[in-house]
Image (cartoon, rainbow over all chains, first blue to last red; front, side, top):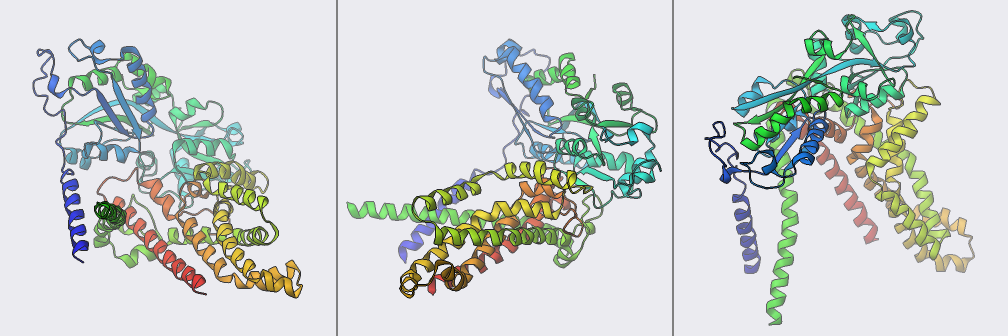
Length: 312
Length: 288
């Protein structure tokens, strides 16, 4: 009996020691007070050779591509700027959704959070001292399968029609135009809580609910695949994905406005969302160096290559 | 000296066991803690009897009856499909095969259990869903039936191994007397092995049910994830796929976030009940 108690006490002891380690760490990088225009040579104490990103699965491949390019070009930090130590550059990107990006910043598990939507006021308040960088814009296009006979009669839907389709007021294709076959519309959406749907809800649906029996695709890739595979499907594919799969699905004009780079950048095309990298507190010089690349011409070129519209 | 080593060994083993138990306790406490926030706002009864799930709207629109039903429905469909196949294979394995063939067949069936569920989901998406759309001309292939067919393949190994284990024992026990009486194998299979292994089959069903209800990825890929009340040829959603789908997007600390934990808690309680039933049935088998 005694032994039992001693074993138990021992375990409690071990756990209490282990759990004391779980207090919140002060976010690193906030100590870089004197990074005023590179007057000081090197802040050796606070230098971190790795930068971590977490968040939106839309933005992750973009950052990843730019990071790969960046690392290939410089390899070590001292080649980026001679005041940095000669350590290998390491940039880690992981995807878990826009919500996870904010969470990672809040809990300081990542340096940057990636969002494919506006930062909510509430989130801004929670972060306290956010630094946000809008890298580009992604638009959602209302896309259909190329075999859909609708493509032959018109390439345009009005906002009202789009709304009615997604709300379930139109159930069959012949309700839009009587020459279309009497086939059920297959509405594909992203999950209701996600960033993409939030944008669509806000800019198209307003207060109306999306029909309950719409298919919720687990990723934008799955949504696009569904539209490519099913000839009665209609869904809001992202502009980037449509460009990557040109010809396999047809984006429709909304209110006569085509989803082109110019229209999206000028804000004429309404169904769009910003791609944002956000950080809590000031950036350390090495983080600033990478962000500079993100918003540079070269970064913008990669963003464009991936099918999104760069900000700069 | 040996006594000391013995003692150290004894302590280490106890510590490790306690550690794994504590992990379970921590997980339960964690999920409970996260979901209690939600239950303060919305009553439990409302949460599991309401039919509407819309995280964008007011908190009262977060209830999961449709999703619970979807989870149960697809699991039962899977079991109805898998049970006859599983029991038949079990019978074949324990009565008609022996030696090398038994080992090989069992090995192959066990490999079936080792295939990652994403791969199953992928096959389901490209074969089953596609088949429904192309050949049967459904507007969409995503349906409870598609999920059920896919899940039935995934739970088959569990049903087969549990069944054939019981049947093996019964067959061996009765082989001598049955041969002495000169009955045929098929007679023995029908009149002795099958009825006697009833409990084993029930245990297999319950084990498979638990497994089917917890499956996430494959089901998410072929069910369409629509929180409406489930019908065989229509889309539906299960609790695990709901959590997997929305957890990444939910704002931390929001009611939606806690509601997902709460639905995890509901699933865990359902699985716990199933596991307890499984334990008692299994205990019954060994007592006999």
